Image 1 (cartoon, rainbow, N blue to C red):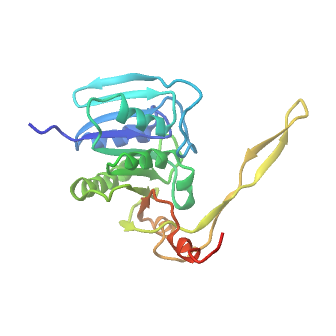
Image 2: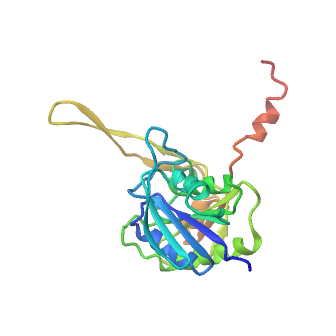
Image 3: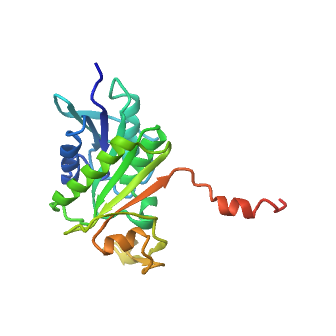
Length: 253
């Protein structure tokens, strides 16, 4: 008899995040769920892995069709453990989130949410990172859950190309549809605020703002979000710039 698909869920907001619980509730409609999430928030960890200490995974809950662990590692560590140690069969899907806050445009480079999804597709299974454009710990995920279910249903039926995953961002409030997009060209203008502690030692807080290089371009993820549409951006883990590769073929080194 065929088993239900095994869906591995992780995140970067930690095991207690509301977005993780909401996503788990949705994914349990589609199959058996294995949650492995960091024991503390790990935002901004991207594809980081732990190499300087042993990893520990502690079972948090277990019931029919559902098991959850908390791990002292990064989101990518969690996914690796899911494929290598914590289940008797490889997951069929990896789903990450729902993140508290957007991971649109170049934020995908820094995102631990997307780090987990990218790690999933490196293992050859369809993978999706979900983010809601609301940083509040008690954010309303009701519409985000419906979007996540619709998109996952499509991937469940259609699959994804090998080594490709999806970066899905959902606006706060009303959602006026779903739009397939490309990543917005932009840059975080990283400014550090310099301060001085009581011992007269300097320290720095990361601050700054995002600069959108193409604010009126309609096929970008930020344009979709600004117009209250959920954005879907396919992500390819092959980072080769083929245009530059072609330009450099006649160079002499």
